[in-house]
Image (cartoon, rainbow, N blue to C red; front, side):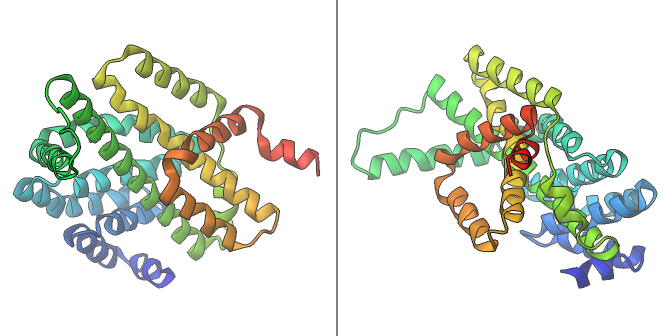
Length: 285
């Protein structure tokens, strides 16, 4: 992976080739977005913007030809987040901006993916009928709730991939110009208390409103807490010298039991934001 970063930073033509190739090839949009993010992080908008404009052409092709919005959203979103990180050097600010980017992301998905949503709903109905149980009624309010859930899942997923692309780009940048710096930076990631309070307030409002359209945002608002708690787990493993196997177990738990451990991760992220768990743990060692 370091060799890829070295090739991308040799010049604009090399970065352009990698970014356009990644955006064009199915399933590699995250790679193209990461290359653009790397150039933006290292050299700023004057080098990153031309890559965004050129790579946006195949991304727009995906959107127009097959109604696939993900490549364009990943490209633009990752570029914006990379620029925010370059200007602020604060992952908390990046996570806050990522939530804001959820607005155009969800809007574009709804605009272009009505057919996909209908297909997923039809799949749920078919599975329900084949299971032999009483068929699920997906009309009226039930259908609206499921539609909003799908929009929320997609938006949260896209924001997560955007952030992953920027994280990969930051790791590349560290490997090339500041070896070891990314690990220390990521393990120190902690949400600002003000951002945490704002996210919690928005989550409460979304839940209390009982409005299906607002319920979409509950999943989106969880993303910053998830990233922050992952950073805290990495810090714990590194500070305790537990070894990489613990991280493997952690990610497997996330993969298979996310619905059970997500509330715990959110609580950890909130506690870390408000009382600085790293400092507290250090005081008791």
